[in-house]
Image 1 (cartoon, rainbow, N blue to C red):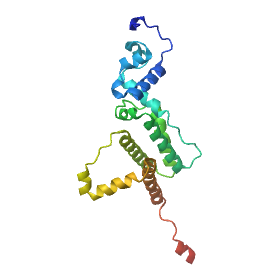
Image 2 (cartoon, helix red, strand yellow; image 1 turned 90 degrees about the vertical axis):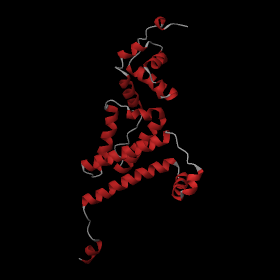
Image 3 (cartoon, one colour; image 1 turned 30 degrees about the vertical axis):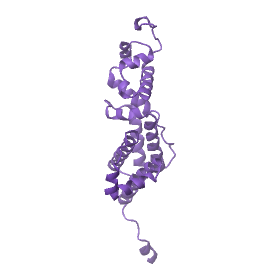
Image 4 (cartoon, rainbow, N blue to C red; image 1 turned 45 degrees about the vertical axis):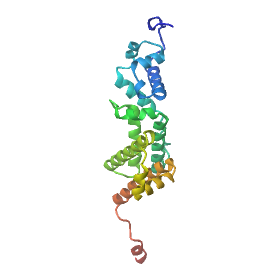
Length: 220
């Protein structure tokens, strides 16, 4: 077995290689394995050599999350705002589900990044293009973030069981669970997006004000 000190110098090692190795470790071994020592082992280098390319553990977390977010394909520029919003947030969910171990890291991010801000910018821009004022566009964006992350956290997390005696004594919960099981999870996600976007449509109607009364128009 070759000792660490006898390993060859890796001239090709750079930040991209370090982060790619970190994401691979995270995907295959989970959050506890995401350490400098384990990433260095994956690259066959000493842990100290990683600090040339990443400052600290926070930089690893931020960089790994950026790799995941970079997988989110932005919707085509010529798509109308509502299908574009739906497509964009569906892509965001898909990217997170492709790397479920990265989802808890979202609460550990230390700094904003261009990878994150490109998604925020596109979402808010699309909402503004619908006719929403900027304050309402921001509120709608925040609602979409909260819904999508909450939905994904439930998908990748442990689903708690319900004791039979609780179901027996709670008809509302029985109906709710039955209703959930009848709808595919992708359809439930789309329904949640539609609830939020229906609210956007309602706000647009409020901003435009009441339209002409059809009966009054016909009588004049």
